[in-house]
Each structure stands twice: as C-alpha cells, then as structure tokens.
Length: 139
Image (tube, rainbow, N blue to C red; front, side, top):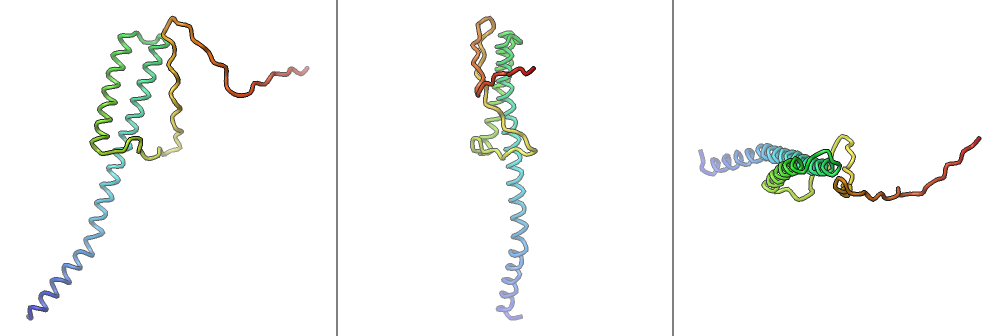
C-alpha cells in the first residue's frame, strides 16, 4: 500500500473519530453543568432555610417562647450550619444570590420583620398602611 494512501486513511479515521466523539464530550459537559447547578440550587435553598430558622428562633426568644440560654445555643448551632453551607457554596464558586429561580410557583420570601422588643418591654405599634375606610351601618 502506498504511504500516502495510509496517511489519508489515518487522517480520515481521525476526522471521523472527532466528528463522532464531539457530541459525546459535549453531553458530559452539559450533565456536569446541570449537576453543579442542582447542587448550587440545593445549597441556596439550605442557606435560605437556615436564615429563616435563625429569624424564627430570634422571634421565639423575643416573644418569650425560648429562654436566653436556649436561644443562644440554637442560634449558635444554626449560624454554624449556615456558615458551612456558605463555605460549600464558595467551594463550588457560586455567585452570591445567583440561585436559579424557584420552581413550583413558590412565592418569594417576605422581607424580615423588624426585631420585636425583649420580653417585658413595651412594644410600639404602627398603624396599618393604606387608606382607612369608615364602616357605615345600614339599617
């Protein structure tokens, strides 16, 4: 066999291998990206849950449902868990707040309420926002 023909056959085989293998390699990259996105979304959800639990524990303390030592222990544990979630997000290289939009029609979380006064202190009450309608009794 002619050496030129051998080289042409090898080049054609290499070209065919590249053409066939390229979609297979792209599929693996897409799967890896999807898995990474899923891990980031899971960690973002865990982060939001820890933040919510921290706020709820503080509210329970402020309303007298938790003693100060219990609240401090719970708060310390929840903050440690939140820090671990943040470290894992950093390890994945996630951008802050770059979580994918929640699915399933979940409503965005309401902004945090201002902290209530400690037990035993008076609480200021603000009037409700919006127009107030007077009730008219009809006989």
